[in-house]
Length: 85
Image (cartoon, rainbow, N blue to C red; front, side, top):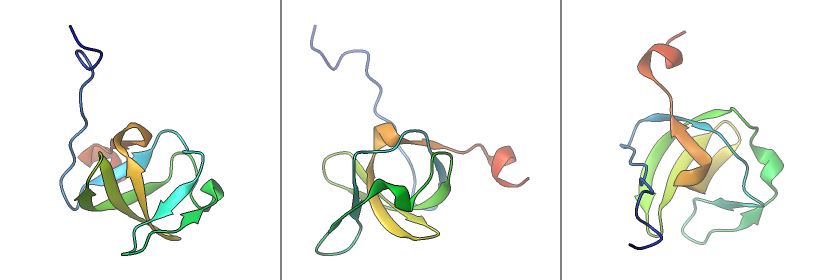
């Protein structure tokens, strides 16, 4: 049995609305040449839109203050009913 057994990979679709559930130590911009930025550019609970999938379980997500690369563990999909309120 490997360490990855029982760990479910989160899968999102382009255009999905996602919510930040934990903040990383730093943010990586979703630009062709990513830059490291402080994590306070986004807030816990902030919602964004999935732009694309990147290698290494990273997702490009557009927030109010820019687009950033976040790993699956930091975001969750927002239910349709929640995002329309």
